[in-house]
Image (tube, rainbow, N blue to C red; front, side):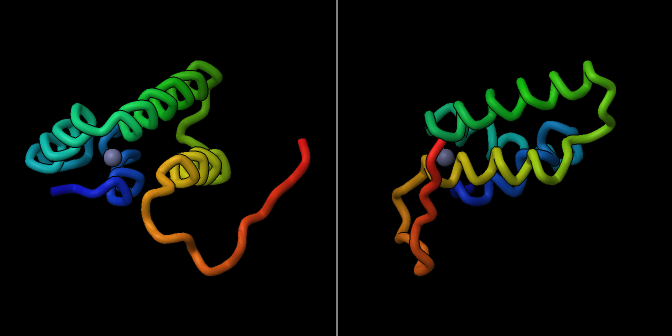
Length: 90
Ligand SMILES: [Zn+2]
Protein backbone atom coordinates (compact mmCIF):
# COMPACT_ATOMS: atom_id res chain seq x y z
CA UNK A 1 0.00 0.00 0.00
CA UNK A 2 1.24 3.46 -0.90
CA UNK A 3 1.27 5.99 1.90
CA UNK A 4 0.37 9.66 1.67
CA UNK A 5 4.02 10.54 2.01
CA UNK A 6 4.95 8.44 -0.99
CA UNK A 7 2.28 10.16 -3.01
CA UNK A 8 4.11 13.46 -2.73
CA UNK A 9 7.28 11.83 -3.96
CA UNK A 10 5.66 9.99 -6.84
CA UNK A 11 3.18 12.57 -8.01
CA UNK A 12 5.51 14.40 -10.38
CA UNK A 13 6.58 11.17 -12.04
CA UNK A 14 2.98 10.04 -12.13
CA UNK A 15 1.86 13.09 -14.08
CA UNK A 16 4.82 12.74 -16.41
CA UNK A 17 3.84 9.17 -17.10
CA UNK A 18 7.21 7.76 -16.13
CA UNK A 19 5.94 5.29 -13.54
CA UNK A 20 5.32 1.59 -13.90
CA UNK A 21 1.75 0.63 -14.51
CA UNK A 22 1.69 -1.19 -11.21
CA UNK A 23 2.71 1.96 -9.38
CA UNK A 24 0.21 4.03 -11.33
CA UNK A 25 -2.58 1.71 -10.31
CA UNK A 26 -1.48 1.88 -6.69
CA UNK A 27 -1.53 5.67 -6.82
CA UNK A 28 -4.93 5.83 -8.43
CA UNK A 29 -6.29 3.41 -5.89
CA UNK A 30 -5.00 5.69 -3.17
CA UNK A 31 -6.49 8.79 -4.80
CA UNK A 32 -9.92 7.23 -4.94
CA UNK A 33 -9.72 6.40 -1.25
CA UNK A 34 -7.90 9.43 0.11
CA UNK A 35 -9.56 12.78 -0.30
CA UNK A 36 -6.52 14.73 0.81
CA UNK A 37 -4.32 13.26 -1.88
CA UNK A 38 -7.09 13.61 -4.42
CA UNK A 39 -7.27 17.32 -3.75
CA UNK A 40 -3.51 17.50 -3.85
CA UNK A 41 -3.48 15.84 -7.25
CA UNK A 42 -5.98 18.32 -8.59
CA UNK A 43 -4.01 21.28 -7.29
CA UNK A 44 -0.82 19.94 -8.75
CA UNK A 45 -2.43 19.24 -12.09
CA UNK A 46 -3.95 22.68 -12.33
CA UNK A 47 -0.63 24.28 -11.50
CA UNK A 48 1.39 22.27 -14.00
CA UNK A 49 -1.15 22.87 -16.74
CA UNK A 50 -1.00 26.56 -16.05
CA UNK A 51 2.77 26.56 -16.29
CA UNK A 52 2.68 24.66 -19.54
CA UNK A 53 0.47 27.27 -21.07
CA UNK A 54 3.00 29.83 -20.06
CA UNK A 55 5.67 27.82 -21.82
CA UNK A 56 7.48 26.44 -18.82
CA UNK A 57 9.14 23.14 -19.55
CA UNK A 58 8.81 21.85 -16.06
CA UNK A 59 7.59 22.86 -12.65
CA UNK A 60 10.10 25.04 -10.84
CA UNK A 61 11.55 23.31 -7.80
CA UNK A 62 10.50 26.20 -5.64
CA UNK A 63 6.88 25.91 -6.65
CA UNK A 64 6.99 22.16 -6.29
CA UNK A 65 8.22 22.55 -2.73
CA UNK A 66 5.47 25.02 -1.94
CA UNK A 67 2.81 22.60 -3.11
CA UNK A 68 4.32 19.71 -1.22
CA UNK A 69 4.60 21.79 1.94
CA UNK A 70 0.99 22.81 1.57
CA UNK A 71 0.06 19.20 1.30
CA UNK A 72 2.12 18.13 4.29
CA UNK A 73 0.50 20.75 6.46
CA UNK A 74 -2.87 19.36 5.56
CA UNK A 75 -1.82 15.85 6.39
CA UNK A 76 -1.36 16.55 10.08
CA UNK A 77 -1.94 12.97 11.14
CA UNK A 78 1.61 11.90 11.63
CA UNK A 79 3.67 13.00 14.57
CA UNK A 80 4.79 16.57 14.48
CA UNK A 81 8.32 17.24 13.50
CA UNK A 82 10.56 18.31 16.36
CA UNK A 83 11.41 21.72 15.03
CA UNK A 84 8.60 24.03 15.93
CA UNK A 85 6.08 25.66 13.74
CA UNK A 86 6.77 28.75 11.79
CA UNK A 87 4.06 31.32 11.75
CA UNK A 88 4.08 34.31 9.54
CA UNK A 89 1.69 37.16 9.20
CA UNK A 90 0.13 37.63 5.90
ZN1 LIG B 1 -3.39 10.00 0.91
